[in-house]
Image (cartoon, rainbow, N blue to C red; front, side, top):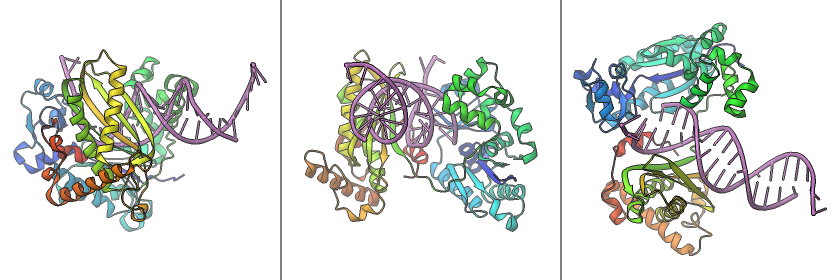
Length: 415
DNA sequence: TCTGGGGTCCTAGGACCC
DNA sequence: TCTGGGGTCCTAGGACCC
């Protein structure tokens, strides 16, 4: 176990909103939100009014009548996020990117070049500020969990270093919801037994936590409360699933409604899976009803798939099964497909004849091969002329897009 | 009053095998 | 016929994170 604090957690502040204020100086110092129907991100000035990400636009306007909505420059978010992470990479190769605007790094091996971890953190913050014009907060500690908490405490635009000698003193005075893994439900459950701070959590008997939260969560939280975090920096982590979803308002639970939507979702997912040669064996479907209750249904196949049509047909079957189980639900509000058990296909892709990868056991394999070949052709055309250049007939038309496609792409994980 | 979209991990029960 | 135990996989649902 390391005895010095060399883990950094760097987190760009109110990232999308800060980029908008960077691009348009007239927005600086003002409450703004990115998005239209829903708030995708809010500036600190807007957060001061209680505006939060995910909030409906109408509610944000009620809280903050003078708020300015901007539609968003998603390409710029990607570019600036990448650039900020690269700044960290100039100090150490041990960088674990968590999302578009957030990363861990271990600087243990580069202090002889660049100074103490605190000095490196300061240098990162200065460079991101001067070279990109963006505020970034950094936490420095001995463990990932504590570094992450430190960066949250540092916000906005700050630096917090937790010296190994002061770890528990720092940690135990903070509220439990700052801990990784404590969301609204767990916070409420802990509050019911009088646990509000991490210090109180640390003093709670293990059996009590495990009874309250289950064995895994109880043990994990107890460990984190004493700053025992075994996690290491992982520089490359492969995705375990790929999915897509679409909120469709309130529509009747009928074939005419869910078929085109499922096809569109399958198209998006299939394209990604094929691009990385990572077909998957398990298909999961989620249907959310008008009352916001939802039901899932999944199937695990003998062989992995990535062809759009096959994926769509399986998803349709699953949705029909869900609806059959909920005959009283006449209205659906969201459809989702996810593919998991992804293959690690890298080199086999080159060895297997095209088509044998998909559906070797499905009756009518030749059809499966033809479908995959058709997908490959479409993928190629789209690669040259853009996504909308070609598609599956009616599917290309009139899919309700509640958020811009560019926003969806930002959230996609590298497969 | 009615939150969008892309992910990860855990749980609990059941099937199935040794 | 009843008894015990361990392990793996699958499915449905939830909590959580960004």
